Length: 197
Length: 197
DNA sequence: GTCTATACCAGGATAGAC
DNA sequence: GTCTATCCTGGTATAGAC
Image (cartoon, rainbow over all chains, first blue to last red; front, side):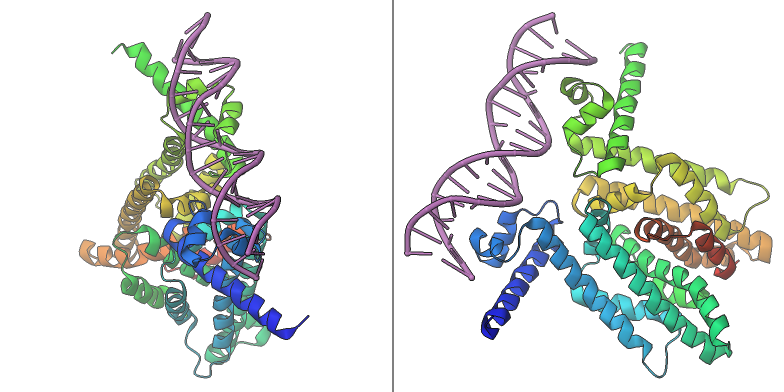
């Protein structure tokens, strides 16, 4: 395979997926028709079907892009030297996410989609595991540094607490989408005040 | 209007909505066709359209039933005399919910639906407000009884903490649907261990 | 009120030319 | 690889008899 062709192919897929994401954010996965995506991308039906087998493949590709960025970011945070306390992770993650996808409502749709679409379900589950792993590492490190726990004890605490911290991030996303008077700052500072250190 | 007619009407609506809910739980809102609901109910198209204007009305009706039960339950908990600590609320609520709707995945779909369907969105927002109100009352009462705070101070604390407790309930629902190895008991006991009392 | 049969349409996917 | 035009399925909603 020639190299240029591969690069072109990848760039085109990216261009299409990005356009699809814009459309999905606007109207939701289900309500977005292929015609919408075609219009948004400025391309034609033929062009799109040349790169993606169908709408569900497109949803999956968009989902992968959305969550992929997030996982990378979290991993990079583990290696930061003046380690922020675990509760502050939420703040950092949420602002990164908002920067990337604009409205978090896309995630609500993704979760809804996971219920019925096995491919999305699998992706979501896999990401949850990654997320949990990263949180556990992060919290364990924090417990060792801050409270002098042994690695084994720290891991135990981290395993317990990870579910709680993940819940808080999920709560942020849900509440920001569903409260019409959501106050981001109030939420985050409340978190930092009441979650364990 | 004759009384029997009204009663019959309401019973029939309930029968249809319940059948629709079974179908929705099985296949999801979008993937469920009117034909599915017709089959599940054992009735005919004509009968259903005689009681509901269309599929979206049916979704709304099911959503109202699902969340309505929950709100009622929470309110009744406030008046319980040996008041369980706020973190224990999660346990009680979640078991009530599981009992009612079987799998929590229906809620994920509801949240996804809220993004695009204004009627569902409005319902979700309204329920969130109720939920927050009930949590605030509950926590405030607890703070007064347990820590002897003044009502004003207790309200302040309760307002801050309510978002956190709601997050935890939402996290439970999401994680139970998205983790293939979700451990309900581990989640709940971790909550009770690390959340403020 | 409820049934059966069907009209009607949106929208996903493809055919074939360029 | 991409375009236009079109096919065709699945699915909502209605018509009309009972």
